[in-house]
Length: 406
Image (cartoon, rainbow, N blue to C red; front, side, top):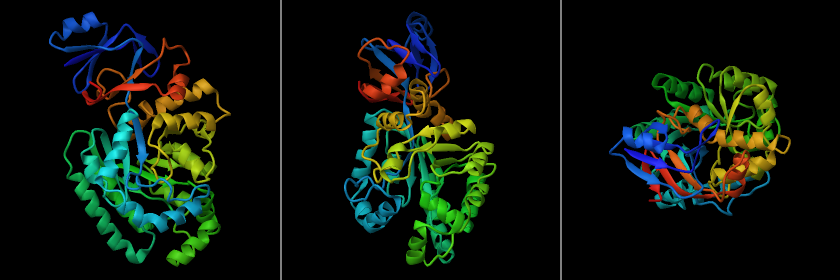
C-alpha cells in the first residue's frame, strides 16, 4: 500500500487540494493525509514537491508501431500519394524496425505520460514488444484483404496472429480485432471476424471515412481510388457502401478512427450504435484529409477521443503534442471548453471506449497515474496550460507501480 501527496489532484470535474491518494494496484481512497495514515498505517508515504499535479495517465487508443522506422521515407500532403509511398517503402520500413525499434517507440510514449495504448498490428511483428511493454496494451490484430480468392489464406493468417496474442497472459494486456477499412476488407472476412469478436467479447476497432478518395469510392466507385484498385487489384467497384459497412457493426460498440469524411447518415448510425470516433489531427493534416468536424459529432452525441496514429503519419507519439495541434486546428470552438474535452478524451473517455478501468483519479480505478511539475499555482484555465506548456512528467504509475521516476 502507498500514499501519495501532491499539491493538486486533477479529477474529471474539479481540482482537489490538500488531499492524498492511497493505492496499491487500484486507488483505495482519496482523503486528507492524516486520515489515510490512520486507516493505512503500514503504507509508504510519498510527499511530492511544490506545485505537483497528480492526474490520470494518458490513453493513446490508436497507434501503428510496425512503421516506427519512418521519418522521411513517406510522402505527405495527399492521401493517395502517401498510400503509394507506403506500398513502395513497406518492406523497407517493416524490415527496418525490429523489436528494439518498436520498444523505443513504446518508451517514448511512456515518457510522454501514456500509460495505456491501442496497438494496431498488421503483421504481429510488434507483439513481443507490446507483451513486454510497461503500459497496458489493447493489441488489435488487423484484418485486411479485399480479394475473395485470397480470403481463406488471409483469414487463416489473421486467426493465427489472434491466437498468439490471446496466449499472452499478463496484467493489462488485452487482445482485440481491427478491421482495416470498408474499402480494403472483403465482406466475407468482416462477417467471420465479427462473429469471433462477438463470441469472445473482444475489443474492436476500424478505420472509417479517412479521405475524400474513400468517400467517392464507396459512394460511386469513382475518384482517386479507381485507378488504384483497377491497376493493383483488378477491382472495378467498391465492396460495400459506407452504410453497408457500418451495418456489420450494429449491436457492438466500435472505435472508428478518423471519420473525417462521414456524412449525416453515417453520423446518425454512429450515434445510434454508440460507436466512438478516434480523432488523429496530425495524421489528418499530414495526409491532406481535412479536419474532423467535432461540432457535428457533439451535435449527434458521438463520443470522440484523441490519439496519435503511427509514425507513418506523425512525427512523434505524444498525446500532449496531439492535443496541442487539435487545440489550434479547431479554431471555431471555445478554447477552454475544447482543452477540457481534449484532456478528458485522452483519459476518462478513452478508458470508457476501450473498457479499461482507468482514466480517472477515483476510488476503485486502476492506479494509472502521472505526476506533472507545474510552474506555479494552477487556475481555472489549467486544461489550456497543460496542453500548451507540456510540463515535465516526473513520475508515471501503471497499476500502482512506478514506471518512470523514483
